[in-house]
Image (cartoon, rainbow, N blue to C red; front, top):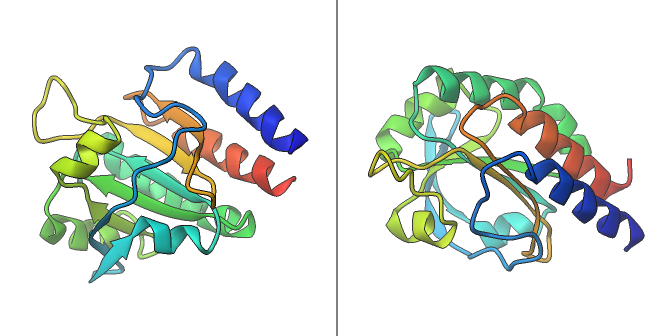
Length: 176
């Protein structure tokens, strides 16, 4: 419990320089079911089912195959073994249609983690609508504890730092 308190305090400090996401640390993350893809294969993804395995890094990105989104996906793919060692599942989320995410899951994510379509209810529930570009999400990364509560938030349009900060958060949850 002490480690979680320290993690929450560190997260609040890290967030101070970032744009604030609507879901505050400690908030119950909205459950959802949507369609996703991994390694080019589509499937149905439910957040609550993923949380049964451990913490989930739910990262929202604006649009598949754009330079920043592709770079961020490649960085998550390069670090996926570290996330798995900390017991975490990584899921990329975008308002893109599943057909676009099928190719993105193979090319940019290297088949190493799932990407899923964030429909209007998910975008609204996580307050990640990109205000200046309707139909797209902003770049916000959440670490959701197995309890379903938000444990960490990093919200900033620049992709640099999202992987590093979410990895540190899940490693702190594991006690490393």
